Length: 297
Image 1 (tube, rainbow, N blue to C red):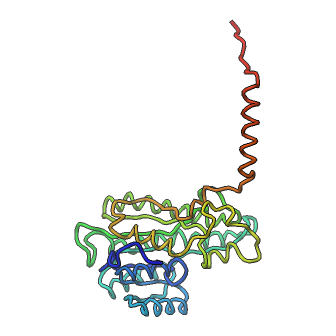
Image 2 (spheres, one colour):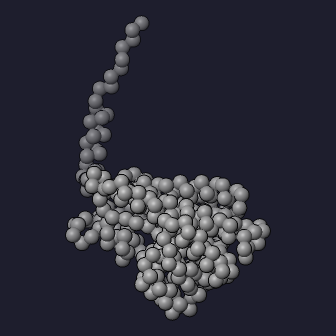
């Protein structure tokens, strides 16, 4: 699909993406590169990491990969420094690294709960913390009046509640809180815009294959207002918008990109039945006697 944005909207920018070697993270890396940015990606799995770098470079995108675990502060510090050393600065940090699996609360160990929080929420804060000195106004390669941008990939699971996702719901709720608080404090002190994106079910991703495997017969599309899964492209376009000057006055916001799914519930009655019941109930209501409490005076 052809991008609606100009091909140079991120020209001269340097972006570092955790989880940028696969799925949504790789699509954001690709679209950032296609729109002018130089891209560094961070990941734990060497094979996937370097395969992604080769793919990006084949598109003519200046790209490099660094092995690292967002749960380790020393890795975060090293990768941020290597990115700046290689490209000369850092403009955009995208925190897309995440962990997930289906599990009921009673079968989830405290260690499993902690692991997802460590990757999603603690990892997000750790990367932001280590990037601050480079992404703030006046940082290396930056001018003294303009800071950079942070994008945190969240989810919609915690906006209501989700079956078998208590660990991720807690982690992403923390990510949203980090986004808002850093937007307030770092926006004020360092001119850094901090925003988030909350994807819904996105086709052809490891996340969807884990959460809705073939063995589970769920009629997901029937509950979707747009009756279709999202695409990785949809999330990347939202990221481009927030990272470009088009979103220059947006700060502290998490954009939901799920076609309205988080608002939806299964339809218990067909439309024709709703009309008929509505007429019957309304007529009954009008004909019912109105009880007026008697005065005690």
